[in-house]
Length: 272
Length: 255
Image 1: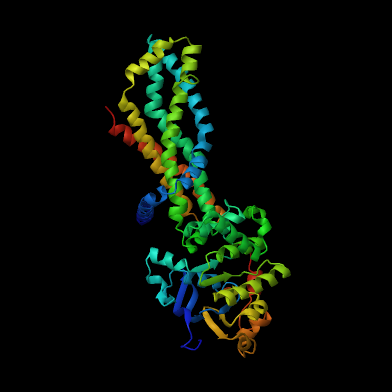
Image 2: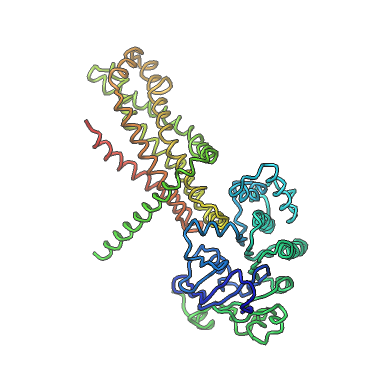
């Protein structure tokens, strides 16, 4: 954990969560420092997206507490939760753009819903945010006319529209070409520095994410396997962390999803 | 026995959940009414886009009733009652029921599919995370649009079936019933309570179809199969509820 005296934005304690009988989290403690970039790394299927939804109060943990700004997210009423969410953004992996609105209207959506800004100011803000993600020229297109990578960039422009204090990125770099990825990495980093934004980045792109994060957690099998500064993670002696960082197929994290039978038994078994 | 009990249990649980959902929507209605633009947009998709099917069906139903009515009334030498025969059948039964059935197939299914797909593509979750309540922003305006559209479409259906292009065309222009008798009989025999009965029915059907379609969409499994199932269930459940409810309402208002 980060030293107790530093300013904690999100505090997770003893988090347990499961989908039916499948355990996703089995006692996880996390501290997300205010104004810093924290990376959550881990193989697919470890429930990284679930963690973001739990922090956003969309799902409830089986046990444990999640505090944002010192407030237990799961004790809030629906209205209080919505007030809290005005200060946080979750960038969905799919982008979650509203398909009946243009790119421009999607970015304008939170501004129109939560502010009384004049149209001219909304226009300027939207164009500035779209310029930051390189899609000002795509403002009149509909979500079905742009690629998945572009959708995520629009979603990023929308996520920063209300200038939240906390922003959670779910796989923001997936599907981006190297140029866009470089720009987005710089954007996340500069947002953090310029606006003092707390950022949580869930990602597989270990090298890129570690290059801009201040702190990182490695999660697998429902537990935190390792945590520390990027340097500490890179130098970690934990076999789990090393396997994940270097993408080795063999190691403590199994590549194969758990199966009741061995591969050969499964193949030799007569078809029913 | 235990299987029956679990089916009954599932049904009651589902009904309880749907009722709770309806209460949530009703609580969101005042807020939604303050944003007429969203409602107008939905009125276009739900109401205006259903116009053609209602106009065409109304006209055909008027033609059919005039032909059938003329055949039967000729036996009794009572063809002068053709106007009131067509009008009473249309106003009391055909207009509210047929419009509701067509509306469930045209607009109810579209609503369920749209909302279900919005859920499957994280649009509803995304809204929630932007502190925008999807019940207020997405569900309530659509529900209101259904409540407003269905009675209006029912009235249009009735006008088409009884009027110049419908029953009148066949009865008066083709089969030679006197025009004055056609309208005079309608005027004399159709009372205000017939029209009120029709409005009450279509309003009730509006609540039922709106409720079923948004519920099915909102709680659809976020997969292609889930959306397809929600669409089918909307049409099947709406149709059965409409005919069942029609019987109950007719029995209550019988005099």
